[in-house]
Structures are given as structure tokens and as C-alpha cells.
Image (cartoon, rainbow, N blue to C red; front, side, top):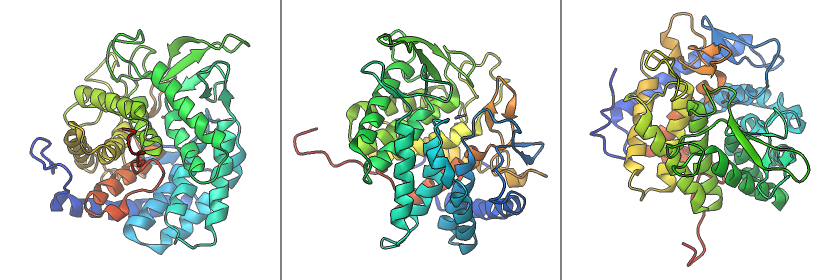
Length: 420
Ligand code: GLY
């Protein structure tokens, strides 16, 4: 079903046919997630991807970064469908994550807590007495996350679960938690580290022509490796875990960067972060097929016979809408809106919509978790379902701004007079 003609759409308006379609999709998602919630309760760790249509969780985890997205889907359905059934479920699933605020083994506390506790706080009444405790949980998680710090040089960064030598592009989404906490009473150092991490990642993971890390503006590397010996903290090389190679652009990494830098700009007003977000968005616009769903890695050798990653498209669509909102005067803002609308139309078509596939338990098929290891290729992935619902939320917010997500990176920081 083609609902959107990318070329002809007026920027910033949601066609009525698409709005109705998005609500129809939400109702299908509601039925599907209710079924999943019956078998995957809060007493059980959340699944990660679907195999043959059925939700599955690895017995031996590589890294446990996804459970917040399960609670987050429930919060989003509560918000968009105004159904109290989901509020109760979302609370239970969020509360089951409370012990993770002290988890020092992962770099993913932003993924876990912004999609669960962050969504919960967003839906509270202003004077709700629960707020202080929920904020405190996020501030604690952000502080713990900020202590995962490689400060061997003046280009510090939050290091990945692989160890102090390793910087991942995914962490740009997790520093949103630090920006959030910094705006809500955390120690100022938490916010300072978020800024320094963002600068280091832009320098080593986002390629710019002429800077030696690749020859395409806005292409993103998954991982950078640094020396860790005292006095020798310098950058050594690029690497990857889930991409095709250190020299190519892993599609989900690009999407994390696009969204993460847009948010970092919204939280700080730093124009360097805005420029980085535009670079990443520009790469996406130039190199992604016309339906706006990327292959899992832009350099995968078998394109066009390689899997697409629908989760990357959902994340990028959210990032494009955020960037267009934060920088509406940009020459490319209309392209971002049209791209997000096309992503929305593609992902809600029968090809990608999970409930349209016999026996599928996920909401969005066509995701990829870890292609080199063959994990979660072609079915639903937990974060794909979450960002799919967030994309619907952001698209609906084009007409109904009160639906837009909240957070310090979601609105432009008012600049001091004369600072622009
Ligand atoms: N760990 C983040 C990702 O797989 O995108």
C-alpha cells in the first residue's frame, strides 16, 4: 500500500489517510502486544527477537540491553490509545527493571531507563507524588552510567560492555539519559561527561571527508578502539561488532547517531552536535533505497540481496522528525519530514507490519539484530517494535504537538542573546 508520495507531500502535515491508518495500526499492535504480555509477564526476563514468529530470549546473553523497550511499548500504547490496561502492565514491567539502575556491566542504561521510567515520568500529572522517586531512579542510573568512564586522555568517553578500550556509536543514544539526569538534579559532572562523550564520538565515529577515517561525509563506524595504558589513551583503530566491517556504515549505528546527535543538540544547543546530526541524516538520505529502509550495512557485499533492517528505519525516522523539529529552518528539514513519512508508510504496510503476518508475535518484522552471528535476522526485534511505536507517536505529534515525547533534548535550548 503506497500512502505517501515522497516527492509531493507538504512538509509538516500528516495526510488524513495516514493518520487514520496509524490508529488502525495501533489497534492491531494493541491486540498483538496483549497476547505477548500474557506469556511474557514481569516475573520473566523480556524476549529479544522473534524466531519463526515466536518471541525468543537467548539463554546465554551477549549483553542485556533491551528489556526497557518492552515496558516502553506498553507506555506508548497507554499514551496513544488512552487505555488504562496498559498503565498497570507498564508499571509492573518498569518496576521489574529497578535493580538494573546499579548495573555496572553494560553501557545501555539509557536504553533501559528512558524507555521505561522516562516514559512513565512523561505520563505523570505535574504534582504526582511518585515523580521524585522515579526521577531519583533515573538520576542514579545515569550517575552509574557516567562512571563507566575512560578518561585516559582529554577525549573521554563512556566505554562499551567490551571494556575501557571500546567506544560504541550506540552509546550516543544512552547519553540521552545523562542529559536527562543533568537537567533533573544530577551532579553537573554527569552532564559534562555526556558532552565530552558526544564530542569524542563525533570525532572518531562519524566520518568526514578529508579526516582520515573514511571518504563519505556522515558515514558512521560502529566501534573505535583506544589504548588504555596510563599515559597512552590515544585512538588506535576503527572496529565493528554488528556491522559488516570497520570501514563500512552499519545501518543501525547510523540511525543511533542521527537520533543521538539531534538529541544532544536539543539538550545543549551545541551547534557542532547539530552539524553532526545533519551529516548523518544527509548520509541516510543519499544512500538509502527509495522506500527509506536501509540494508543492514551500507557496505554489505551482497546488496541488493542483503537483509534490510526495519529497526534502523524506525529509529532514523524518529531521529529525522526530531531533527526537523529542532532545526525547522534547515534546507533539508522538508526532506527529513518526507523521509519519516515514507518510513512510516513503508513500515506500516503489509510487508513489515507484524500482525499482518500469520503466526508473527512481533509488531514490526524485517529487523536485524546481529547479522555476523546470525541472530534475529528478518523477524521482529524488541527495540524495533518500540521505535516503530515511537515513530507513530512522533508522526501523530505533527498534527497534535502535545503528543510529542518529553525530555531535555526534545526542544531547542534557548540560546543566550548574542550566542548564535
Ligand atoms: N546494542 C545496540 C544495537 O544492537 O543496536
